[in-house]
Length: 357
Ligand SMILES: Cc1cc2nc3c(=O)[nH]c(=O)nc-3n(C[C@H](O)[C@H](O)[C@H](O)COP(=O)(O)OP(=O)(O)OC[C@H]3O[C@@H](n4cnc5c(N)ncnc54)[C@H](O)[C@@H]3O)c2cc1C
Image (tube, rainbow, N blue to C red; front, side, top):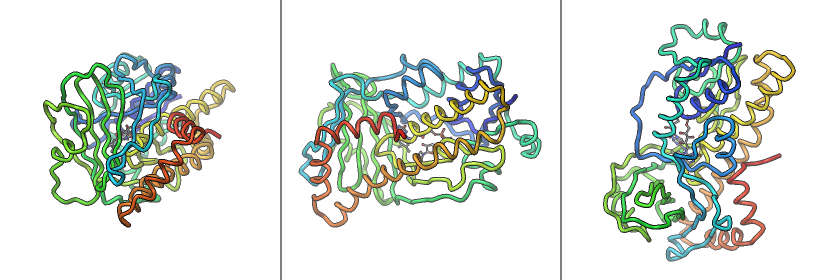
């Protein structure tokens, strides 16, 4: 029984590791456009996803920086804090550097006898016959262009700017902040006592001096250096069909969301959890890992993924409308709603576990 994964992003690597941990032979084909590792990128991973990752994929504790409080501010309300999320100062989620997670997964996969890196796909026809299950995480290959192009798509007409700022040491740098500015949301995500990652999503593509804006919305750090700033276009998408025969689309190819809630990779970890559950069940019954997995996976995850993606988009639009009509109603509405004890708990659970049905 052999599984093939197309693409070498974080989702591909994490899924491959989950499969080989079960003794399932897995070949992973590298993406064509070999991108350089972007050292400005970090990921927030939720508490329950970390627990799953540590237990079923790889123990990543040593790479994590814990966040135990989130503060949300609004520029429309004079940069006032409108929401606090905290878990009695215990871990809410943790931040990890993308390139460190990538490196660790690759090094551990290389040691595994069930795993092989493959360089180039000579023929998709041969691959379709050779493997019982093909998991496609590559947004740009021929299979994607042929079978996985129909999607619900939204262009945010925005760009995400990412960097890491170096600052004077802070003894407890464990509070993440996000300000909904008139230009878009800016998040400060601590990764050590002296470093904090910044993600600023800004509408339009005008030439903007990001470093000046970072300094403007920075409320607590004595900045020593702003590292290289990277920028890319933002969109959201949800595939209409998750599979074609024995080929399953996965990762950011399946769903891409606005980064304001830091949930894109978290959704993929939840997908890995669902897929592994289906695979475990098949193995326990002595069944083949075949195309039926794809259908079961779609039935199980498509509706919740769709609702979750739209929920993130809804929050984005709430603040966007506010900026367009130039008033502070939605910030006040969110302030009122999210500070209610029950809804505050609900949002923490939703960000941690996703939609649980
Ligand atoms: C600025 C930014 C910050 C993020 N922060 C978090 C986070 O804190 N927590 C989390 O769980 N996920 C986050 N994500 C999503 C996460 O980066 C991807 O889900 C993850 O890299 C897995 O990618 P992959 O292996 O499936 O695909 P890959 O093969 O790595 O390719 C996917 C590519 O698409 C990019 N991408 C992701 N979302 C968007 C988008 N909305 N618009 C345009 N491009 C996009 C990814 O950065 C990546 O380069 C963030 C995404 C962006 C763009």
